[in-house]
Length: 149
Image (cartoon, rainbow, N blue to C red; front, side, top):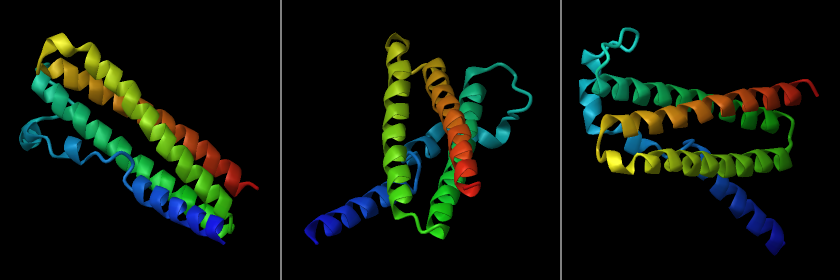
């Protein structure tokens, strides 16, 4: 009984932690984003601030899509009454998010001599987006496997 209760609390913790795919409020709330209405991401003029704004917005879009795919995957596991699948997917997502964040932290750190230059943020945000886009593809494949059981 105690093991089942512990497993249930662990699962609830993991599900609550993964609802937001990366705790990206610190990215969504950057001061420079107040200039986003002045930037056309489809026609960048080449200044680094605009590139940083667009990199941020592109990552936010990918993160939102990841959340939708992830939630759909958990919902599909619910439909099939596969609690162990939900737990495994949630645990896997926590692990993946940690990998993504650590990987991109290396990119951030590689620009340490750059100070607060925009290139550092652009490289970091591009890393987050690239890994998130890859994760979206992985979860879509996993979803297809579950649907076609």
